[in-house]
Image (cartoon, rainbow, N blue to C red; front, side, top):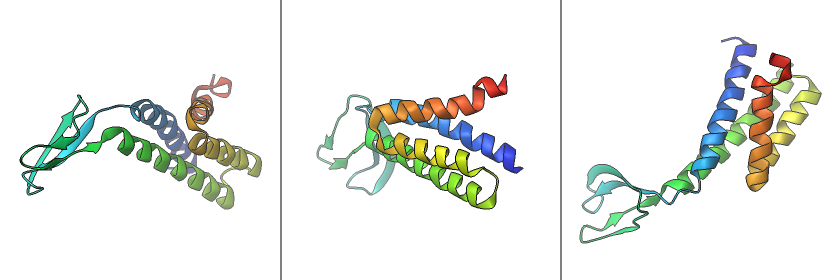
Length: 131
C-alpha cells in the first residue's frame, strides 16, 4: 500500500470508526466473558445493562466504556500517524499541524470535539477536493 492509499485508508478508519465508536460509547449494554467464577469461557451481551452477580458470581463489564477507550486509542493513533507523516515528508507541516490539532480536539473535546474531528476526516475523504 503506497503512502497516499495508506493515508486514505487511515482517514476512512478515523472517520467511520470514530463515528461508530462515538455513537456506541453511551450504550448501557454490558457483557461477560466468563461464567462459573471465571472458569468457563462464555461470552454474552446483556442489552438490559445487567451488572452481574448471581450464585456463580458472574462479572460483567460496560460495553460503553470499552467502546470509549477504543475511540480514544484510534484518535491517538491518528495523531501519532500524522506526526510520523510530517517527519517523513508525506504531509506538509501546515496539514500535519492541522491534522494533529483537530485530532487532539477530537480526543479531548468531548462530543463537540468528536463532531469536529469526524467532520474534518469526512471532509478529507469526501469533500470538494474529491469532486
